[in-house]
Image (cartoon, rainbow, N blue to C red):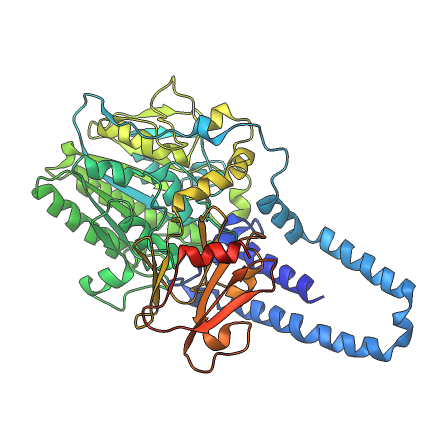
Length: 568
């Protein structure tokens, strides 16, 4: 009963945000955490979640008490009937179908990851190198351009699209359907796959350090790359992602709020888009005057689900009768982005600047979802070149194709990861090549997770004063659970920003692997070591033999220690 209520509550809350129930985006944020999220606009659904969790705790105890009083319910037939009813309840619960889709790979196409993955080999195409501005329009999918569903909406961006190289068939694939995942796909050519099921990853010092992304490539070409976003950099690890991949200027809510005229002019998530785009234009002017090659990435947020947050500049801008708030925000974003682009195109630096506008991902559940579902859902993606020449490209693609396509527009030629250059008519995208790309991506979870680059275990040094451990010259902070395989490869589990505890993760470690758990002594599932504040628990899964001791300064765990545990 408790489990059924919990997963039902999780499904209801998840569906409120995604309109798809529990998907890989929900799993990611349960793993990574929600630091920096705009909680205040979700007060109602948070209250519902608290109610369901409370119900799942107290209702079973009440029913159990009544069950004990009713001895007839202890008969074999009653027990069997209860069991069958429970199995049936789980089978028909929509959450079960969601979990199966996420975690069970069936009938995966027999296609190797290595045969489709491309290491980038950058070569100049001969066209002049350009600076660029890249705008992620939050959840602003191309589906809004369907005149039959949304007549006369976003008129300015529709005109701008026709003056650009525009791509009309950009699908959303597995592992790309939320902001940081969309960024990973469009910059690194891979979906976002965490290295361990249930792992928050927020304790990792780097974000997908093993992936080579557009930022890494352009840094070698002497580009100076910056990111400006109105929301907190802590949310979903955006700041860590950009700092790990060639960006020198990384600015979020905390970094930008002191630079706007009214510090209190914010919504639940962060800066309004009129403030952000004003700051971005100042940065564009500064970088252009510096005569340096640069790339400026922006992330808007006025169109964030469920209802949007229209900027003060849009007080008189509504869609039709103004009754649908997210569509009002779409109109606002249309006005603000097109105005920003016009300022760039009116500047003396226009000829050196390429402008990209794309969705970060398809819209999550909002006040226009029922209308959106009446049309084919595709992502927005167009490249506005300085010459203003428009071209429509309708070949099937996905967000992983954005980075190599942008590189081509900037004067470089290369494929990148699983992404292909959509400007090359002879270069098939994986959306064209593979009949069910989503199943293929799910079957490639293991090689994709390797991009987190967990080091081989070469000994663990403990810094008790700073509550951290050092492995392969990288620092990780307490509390931490480290799994070590017989080949000495490692996996990491953290409680930071995670719904689960390390004791829960302990049961997911592969049988026969060693584990090292560093935490406050009272949090370990063994008798307390009263003589210390922090303790270590080390052992092998599947074995009842373990070691437990209070940590001291400069303590360590050596390769010899781990091999002894593995051989126990």
